Length: 248
Length: 141
Image 1 (cartoon, one colour):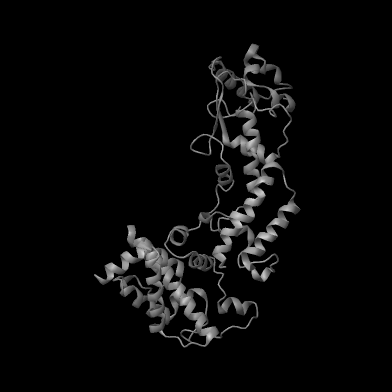
Image 2 (cartoon, one colour):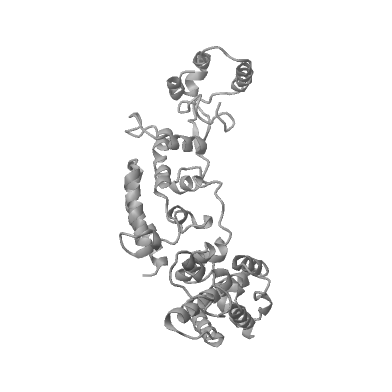
């Protein structure tokens, strides 16, 4: 079938006097003959409605009309979704903390293991526990300091059972497990709290590395408490819900 | 400014500035690259240039929706396709536009996207292509 004609031929033209038959050229294989007969049957059933125009429907948006967004999103169909999406971006946390969590999820924080790989100056051992080499998983869940910190932090809201155990070595797995163990508003609050905790640990770690502070759980907890207070004041509903529940 | 703040600026200021051009023209790859360079530099360092070491995450990853592990910054090439599908679409749905009879040049990718996106319920069949459009039970011949 000539391409040029295929690009022009409308259904109206094709169906008047069976003009579409003229478009088919050359020898037909047996498969083609089969297809041709099926097509013939299908087209027999088509009735033209002279008074109503064709309706074109944009399948990708619910309204049936073109939108640039629907077209753009369609170009990403089949892409792998990002598991911690809701936990990070749907939580109530300041954007800079969400950005930090995004970096954590992609493992791109400048912890000692990544500095070492690039031969950059780095602390030899985890600055918080001084026992093992530091990486982001260790810093946030594996470290004894972090575990103690999480336990104390979560105990204040009555969720001490959710604190990471020695068997939890991956921050991501621990977080998704915790996330699934609570529901509703509590979930949002818990996610905010976990972001708050991670952010506090990270800040405390940086304090120790760059400002020569000594690691202290009490100091970290005070920092977290102040920060939580600020967050609640500026509208972190889930977080305040958690804290009031914990107190009451 | 924090990086989170710069993400917003990149998406809503630097990217919006090119939307108009992207809608009208198929910008060459070198131009898109140059624009990306500026966007990337601003995101990671707050200035025009950034070295590889300043960028913590590869740019194609950053240019994904947040659901897909990016920062919700638009990918210019794909955004261009999405914006320019509007022309063949309008040509089909609003044949009384003054430019509708003029030849319209669209790239292969856009044609494919249009073919996937549009189905037709036939009426008088005057604006439906027999061999190309999805008009028989939502499929093409």
